[in-house]
Length: 282
Image (cartoon, rainbow, N blue to C red; front, side, top):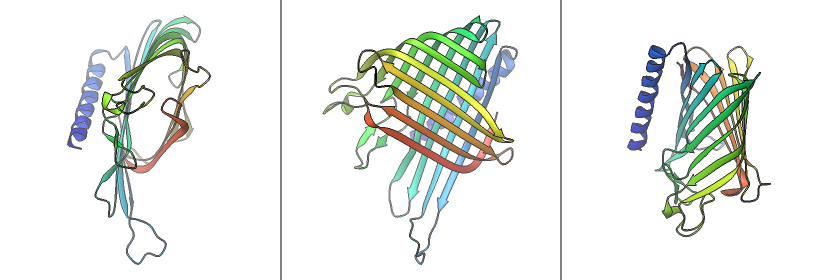
């Protein structure tokens, strides 16, 4: 847990330094914006409460940071996403992890014609802390699993809030520590291996809009088909982040994520986090 907190401090310091450098040195070429939120949830019941329920407390940290470059016909959009959540249930000695994400997206483009660009994209996803299943067995930790995608393609970019990138030649690499594949496959990596290489096609879309004053919705969708193994089984990763600002420092946030990856599990994975807390934009 201490290592995780130190990682957060380092990450925030890194983002702050980068933001200062961008603002100072390349104001005309770079645009940057970000949001940090700390969300808290609590439920409490006394012994006489007849409706049932268990007292609990939970907290979530979220970082969403964009740093984009534009010069002439060249654009380079970057997004860093980090999220971590914990919950403590009364009577349970352990603190459970409810959210854990670390993701970097980078998309370079050179204008072809109109709203179209020749493009190269890079995507990296992992988690920061150890994960356990319902039987308290360790199933993941930092950089295990780690997912990387990279490939050339074509980008349609109407604005910073609406874009679609298509890459028909995408390389994908999944990394897992060998102790997770010692007795069987894990996250699509075969027993005894520590990596899995795939080659296929990828579509990434981003759409952000305002529902009304102080209410914004950001949607991110990634589709991937592996040419080398069951290309008809398309991997899906959809993320939705709804921010309802109360004032400059307070907001209500809803984060929804839906994943389908038949190499990991042949079912749809869904997570949802809702909370009210401190919000800071920069």
